[in-house]
Amino acid sequence: MTRVLVVEDDPAILRGLSDNLRLESYEVMTATDGETGERLVHEIPPDLILLDLMLPKLSGYELCRKLRSEGVTTPILMLTARGEEADRVLGLDLGADDYVTKPFSIRELLARIRAILRRSQPPGALPDTVQFEDVAVDFRSYEATKGEAKVEMTPKEYQLLRMLAARAGEVVTREELLNEVWGYDNYPNTRTVDNHVASLRAKLEPDKSRARHIQTVHGVGYKYVP
Image 1: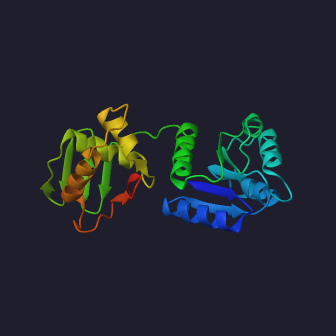
Image 2: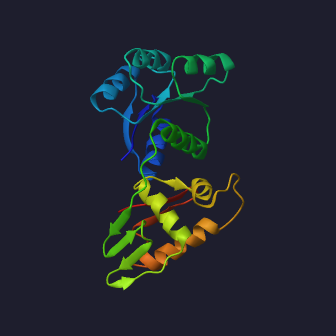
């Protein structure tokens, strides 16, 4: 599970960020000052740091500078109420990977988090097979079974499931699926992804009334849970 450290001293913002990140299946650690944030980075290394700039004990600028000088390469997304260009430039020059000015949209923030994580991590190898409960899918031979019965699937359904399985436990957006599976560079208002997911569920999910393995993350996309 992807671990995110949120370093923020405003209790309301910290709670809101933590709740939304957990809803997206991230593991969340929190700190309300820079010194605690620095300690957590070294004790329980996160995959990404959400870093407020105006912090007690050690500011976000100072913490970012210190972590980079120590060789910590964890992606940093800075959060600040400041909107001046000089502040944004300073944060980026110190080694931050992106910068969001408060107030911000949670959907935009989550999209930026996903983009940073994609850039910072090598793409996972596509799996050759997937198995859950009595379902077995072989992507090399394009064969699928459920129990003893053979399941007929289209090539796009195989590609869609394979991409979801390659990022098991992570949310994959509709835009990413349209790009990778269908080759769209722009994202038309289409139900293509949703219709294919519905078909996969009907063919593979043990309980058709309740999706356990191909889950919807409303307003964002889908994720595969083994």
